[in-house]
Length: 149
Image 1: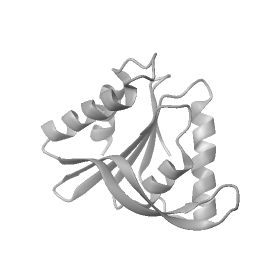
Image 2: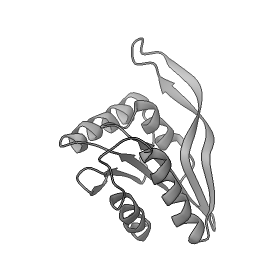
Image 3: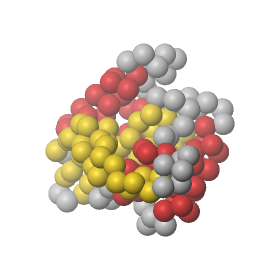
């Protein structure tokens, strides 16, 4: 799986992140091409039902959403969520923990504190929900880093 992370990182860190305009579409398009060229079946906006916590009330609800990219090859499944801001959204983290995938990748545009802030969010979701440990990676575009969580 590390080979996949290396390839995804190469694509992600080669994208110009100065402007958020068009960044999501550009990056997801490049990742789609990477996986399709590697023989994966690639699904953009892959539908998923997941349990989510309403942050203000603490209530747990069932939601329907979409993963930015889901790729499958020979039974191996990869899920990717990309948020163009500093943080992975809580619902993005919840989707990554609950999707049936062997490798989950959360990508943020980020800033200087993005790694620590996102790790806190990921740990909070794990603690709140008791979700199973996943093979989860965090990529921060601004500083060109990939972290196994």
